[in-house]
Length: 276
Image (cartoon, rainbow, N blue to C red):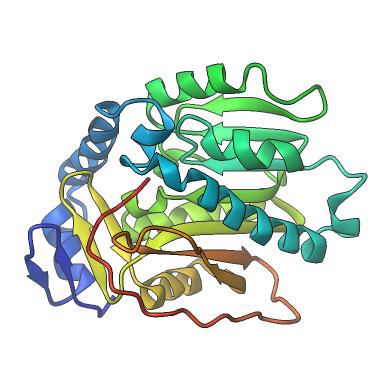
């Protein structure tokens, strides 16, 4: 990836390849790569299992985040699913689910079953507790997978929607592509991915504390292309504090959409601060 970037200490990199060599070593150096992932999980193991904790001290953005996601999801369901998903048994996968914040506030209301995927055990335990009294027999959290995203293979053709929010930045580029290549076969006909992530204004920003990378819009699009995914629709998240990274939602499909919807991103002045 021929894009320049910086890390959280201000060090500049001429390319993503240069950054990844420093972060995870040369190709084939599994020891350093394994440590990258361990350090990322260790960081989150030290975070309180609460809304404020998983949102990096910005718990007050929860409502705006959920509202933006719901508007985006409803539009996609109406366009992509037969009869807008009514009279169907709908299943979603919540990737990087944390304490079940998105499942509880959004997904469980629209899907009959939601599976949660989260590598931090204390977060997943909190999710079980938070969701124990939520939902019903027809709208429920079904499976709780304590597995890292880069190691997870979803069940074939189980999901109508795979929701990936504030977690894909922990994956290397190659593992990013590998995950989506595995997950493509796990979508039902008409199913789609939603990726909702922070955006760097250009290139990338490497966070050395939590072992994550914030990518720019062109960086994401190149990775989606490598995954063989088609950009169906995008939307900018509104209502977040100005000091945070901009946040963008991408809807991605395996099939070529008959119409590609595009929205223009507005450039905003931000300082590097990552929320999860």
